[in-house]
Length: 230
Image 1 (cartoon, rainbow, N blue to C red):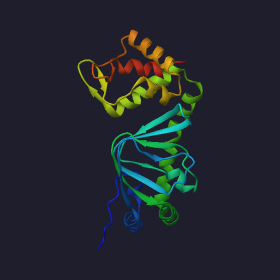
Image 2: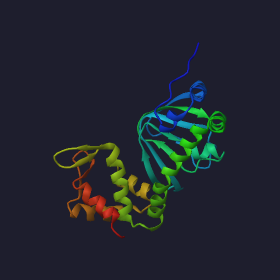
Image 3: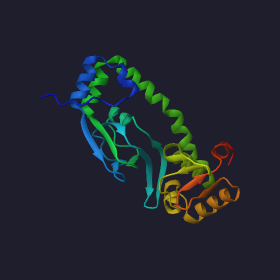
Image 4: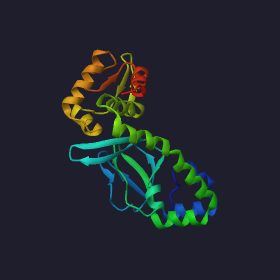
């Protein structure tokens, strides 16, 4: 019996030949992960490309036990592991399921064979990778040069994009972001995060809801601060 599972939407897959897509679907291994699970660990072997169909994933660098610098949040549908599998290298960053996650894994040998055999697919994958470079450069600058407040704003806006709910008071981030977690994700001391949050609250840009959610009152002003010189 044919148990293949249709692949989640990913732009590059639309360029595949029918034969290539059939091979990828036949090899795809479905997976499900609960929230909080690390689905990829930097320096570990990448067994295949993950096609994500449901959930939100956090990409981060674990620089130390007290620092998991957040690179970005990845919504679905999306894909992880193309760079690593293409060049047969370990994961370059770690990934955590922020919400329950569903998707499928295309084993590395099958994915590389598709790249070798299907020129249109290869071209599309290269274009997809090229589109990620600008984001990578911006994040690298943030990690090396931005101050605590700008790093904090960037992470808050990332979470607001995926977990923000509009209310009369502002954009409520319905995800538990304690000050300790924020410190962990931006690579800063807890006291530095406390000062940055207090400064932003004093300017009426954000506050904490009675339920403990971060509330952003002026997203556009925060974005402007993010772009301003440190």
